[in-house]
Length: 337
Image 1 (cartoon, rainbow, N blue to C red):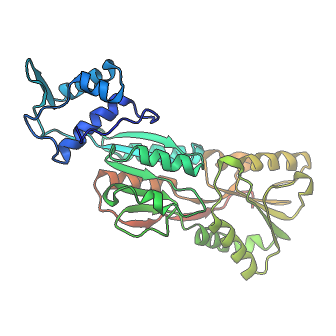
Image 2 (cartoon, helix red, strand yellow):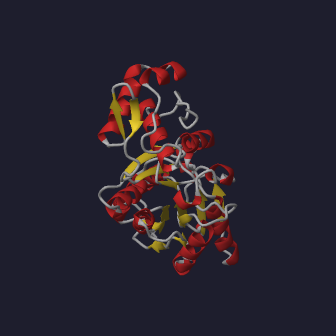
């Protein structure tokens, strides 16, 4: 019974599913062949201290797939090692928000109809990130992972086989190999976006970048570097703050905001002061969402193309050759600048 992995009772994957996947994995690896007996329900229950109903459900699903059969006096045995393995995708996001919904919907709409996707969230907790990956190894056909951390996670991500790994949104520069990736070039994207609007930006006295994100948003170091590089090269007065102080908001200043909460608070404050975005004050938001097209007459944004990112991820899962892509980004000019 060496092929049967000990069930992890702390895992979010049900025990019966773990048993079922152990059998399928052993068949795929050639450890179980046609006609070979597998342990009885009682033996597995006693070995791992499990309830009989758990094993019964696993075996019943395997029987319905035509993988195992039972015969009086012989017990359970492998009756078919040729089966159509369903494509299952492990999708690991940091958290769900408006632009992740765009990305998620595009991935789903681009996939073949028989492909299953299960979504997990790490909430910027690197221990949870590692646990989710480790506890789900070997259970999915593909692993699409969003490594939103300003630290090296290559040790964790490299546990996933290259032929199954898709890294999305942020590259893992320390990793080499033939895995797939579609990522933002944060430093160059923000730099080039600001350069494209240099003349409009220079009409203001200064630009303030608030990197406030709170515990549930990720601010890449590349964004800060690209912003600072643009301002220094073009001799534009700037400030970098971790949180915007509403009381210190100044006229003829551009505010580049990472947090949508800060964006809303800023709009409330300038309404109180009767300022007009794009005339008295400039506003640039990071990451586009549909509501920013109409909010306050239109908010200018620096944003990657999340629809394209989702389409590329779906193409990898559908069988396209694995490659590394830098996702296109743009500055979308609206009335707030």
